[in-house]
Image (cartoon, rainbow, N blue to C red):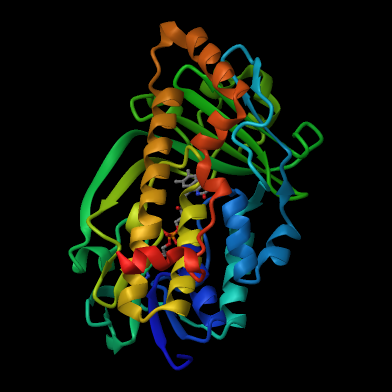
Length: 384
Ligand SMILES: Cc1cc2nc3c(=O)[nH]c(=O)nc-3n(C[C@H](O)[C@H](O)[C@H](O)COP(=O)(O)OP(=O)(O)OC[C@H]3O[C@@H](n4cnc5c(N)ncnc54)[C@H](O)[C@@H]3O)c2cc1C
C-alpha cells in the first residue's frame, strides 16, 4: 500500500491537510499550487474541536496552538449591546488563529510528511482515471484530489459541479494590532440590524475583525477605503477596534457563496474543501469541515481499496457537511436578513435558543463530530 501516489491541486487549508494526512499514511504526495509562493489570503479563522482533532491527526496541533487564542467565552451580543450568549455554540476546544500562521503550520506538516509542493503549477482539470492536467502537461496517479477552492477547475472538468449560489451578503476582514482594549480568551460577535461585527483575538499581537452586512448595504461594503464612520455609527462601543483598521486595508469585501456538488468523487478523482462545498462562514465551519474531510479520506484509504474508500468516504461524510452548509445559511439569514422592526424578537429568540445547550450543540453539531472511517463503524457503509 505504501507505494500509492496522489496528485493534489491546490495548497490551501484543505489541500495541505490532505497532503499531510496521506503523507503520514505512507502515500507519496505532490501538491500543485498555482501561486508563485505559498501563502494564505485572509485574516483570522475560528477552529472548532473538529478542526483541532484534524490538526492532531496531521501532527500540526502543537505548532498551531503555540500562537493562537484559546477561547473559553465566544460571546454573542445584540443591537442594544446586551450579552445574549456567553458560550455561544462552543462544544469542546475552540481556538482562533491568524490564517497565515495556520497555513504555514500546514505547509510544514505536509512537508514533514514527505509531500512535494510545486508552486506556479496551474491545474486545468482531471480525469476519473487518475490523471491531473496542468498547463505543463499531464501527470498520472493512483488518486487525484481537487482542493483548488471555490471555482475549482478539477470539480468542473469532472462534471461534479451542480450549483453556486450567491447568498446576498458578505464581509470585510482585517487584522489590527492587539491592545488592552481587546478581549482575552473571549470573542465578541455583535449583531445590529443586518450588520455583524466580530472582535477576535488571534495571537498575542493581533486581533481579527470581521464586518458582515448584506450586499445591498452600500456603505457597509466600503472596505477599501474603509468607511469607518458608518461602522462606528452602528457600533459606537467598538470604536477602539474600528479606529485601528487602516484607512486602506488589505481586506476586500468578500461575498458569500454556497457551492453544491453532484458528488465528491468520480473514478479515482475526488474533490475536497471549498471545491466540494464552499459555504457561508457564519458558523466558522467551512475550513474545519474541509480539514476534517481530508483526514476522513486518509482514514478510508487506510482501510479500503481506492474505489471503495472514495464511496465510503462520500456516503459517510457528505451528509454531515451538507447539513453544516444548510445551518450556516440559516444562521446568515437570521443575522443579516432579519426584518428591522423585529430585532428585539430576534434577541429573545437567540437568548431562548441559547438556554438549551442541546439546541446550540445541534446548530454547531460538527464541532463535536469526528469521522472514524478507519474503524469498524464504517463497515455497514461498505456492505450497503
Ligand atoms: C469571510 C470568511 C471567513 C471565514 N471564516 C472561517 C472560519 O472562521 N472557520 C472556518 O472553518 N472557515 C472559515 N471560512 C472558510 C474558509 O476560509 C474556507 O473554507 C477555506 O479557506 C477553504 O480552503 P480550501 O483549501 O478548500 O480552498 P482555498 O483556500 O481557496 O485554497 C485553494 C488553493 O488552490 C489554489 N488553486 C486554485 N486554483 C488552482 C489551479 N487551477 N491550479 C493550482 N492551484 C489552484 C489556490 O491558489 C489556493 O491556494 C471563512 C471564509 C470567509 C470568506
